[in-house]
Image 1: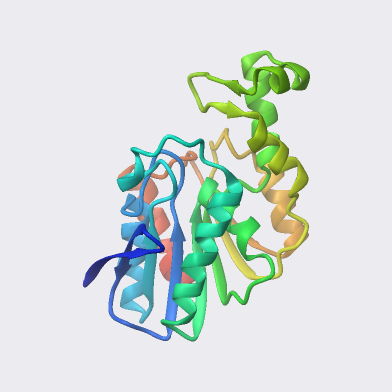
Image 2: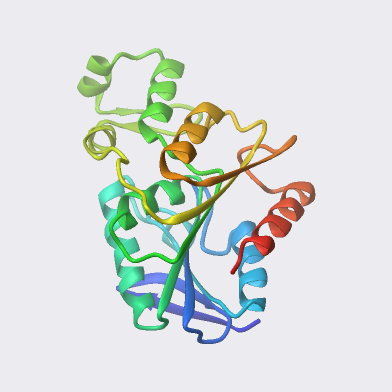
Length: 233
């Protein structure tokens, strides 16, 4: 498989496969990068079916770990739209793949864009719920959060401007043909919230028995490979 390292608006990115009129923008999850295992699997399966895949490093990830500014949703949305602008000049049909928080940023960025298909792995469909869970874990109220601005903990740091952005940008529109895969034991993105999203927007939802939020074992990645292969049209 051909891999081309490029930069789009200065952002490190990779084009997987040969030029095609079908291209998939892939957004990785937290503590990951543009060459995450799930993106490798996606690229192998997608290029075999005539797609080209475009992945890139989100702020503070991959080749951008040196960045010090706190990752903010609006910046990630801007970068995803830059990827989209690049992609529409490469192919006629643009689809998206998102893992965990990468899926959440795509929900923010692409609600009103022309998207062929969307495939989400362990997607964050309700970021406000996750932040509330972390606030509870840290034993802080919203008032304390606002006063302290940033809360360090052993899971993910909390940043109040991030929280206010999330609250003011609910996911109310999503009209794209969407396929979701989650692990049965995913405690980060709770089943009820993912199921509600899937029901509200007509998404296909598949659950892997015994799977967790982070798909990284051979068992989980093999399941993901078969799942994505069957849904690449």
